[in-house]
Length: 370
Ligand code: 13P
Ligand code: 13P
Ligand code: MG
Ligand code: MG
Figure 1 (cartoon, protein in one colour):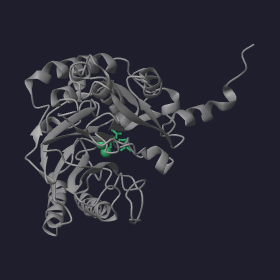
Figure 2 (figure 1 turned 90 degrees about the vertical axis):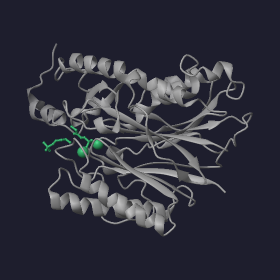
Figure 3 (figure 1 turned 180 degrees about the vertical axis):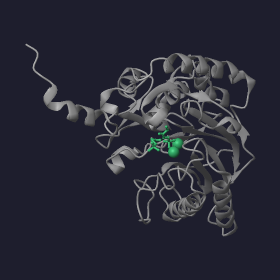
Figure 4 (figure 1 turned 60 degrees about the vertical axis):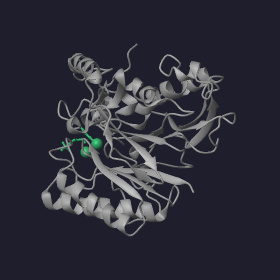
């Protein structure tokens, strides 16, 4: 019997501003999901936060896009929003774009990463949750995990992954997708996913030559673009991802390794700045300096018959101190640029801000230069 792992997340109110999730919101989520586990809708769950995003990690047998599971997440976010309103938290209900649930939470504001698969004898599941950035922030690390032999030694030395993987890439503006094989189509893949605000990796699959079923994903990333859903800026769509590891897949250490770079991502203050992605422990997952810098947390589980072990807080490791120090240095350097690109995002990503208004206001004062 297959197991489904779903992460559904939303910002339903920040404390203060966009810094952190208030513990009372996590209490509500824990109560709701405990009841759902008692009622056998969920097999297991873990509630956490990254910055101001409330994260529901759930396991169940209902498959992806289940009305019941999405409805449970929606109800949880609505209850938490009510509490956020009572407490006067900032931007209460920020990511709930619709008034009522229509059967599938996709397109309603929250972010979703979920996958259904046949459990192996021992199934390491690595979850990632980011704040103050966008889904394209996962392009770089997911590429490195599954396609870069300088990151993943197994691509060279483990016969079970030597053939490579298949990447499903979405064009989030045109709402189309394409499947690309690595290593054969590496350069085509990179040509797309380097443009991370438009092309995002949605899933990774094993190849047909793998021992793992080729139609069961081994990684999945949330790709909701709130901008495109709502037609206006309503906060960056802070993304989440699930990656399976070991035995025919990259090892846990290979899955974590790309995060040692602190690569540049878009988001940060007012969703309008480039900055380094800093890997942190859950305790440090609060966005303070200039509402950031953008952060990623990772919780690792072993999965057995749908049950999750206690999570391991994977970036709570001094081995990532050097990354954090570098990210702080880059933060210091980028911040000195103030409103100048490339710290501030380029024009096309600034449409929701005052820039179009400034252009309009100055309209007739622009004269033709001979
Ligand atoms: P205010 O609307 O409170 O100025 O906040 C702006 C902001 O935080 C953008 O999300
Ligand atoms: P969030 O997308 O995390 O709510 O942050 C919005 C923001 O404007 C931070 O400055
Ligand atoms: Mg927020
Ligand atoms: Mg957020």
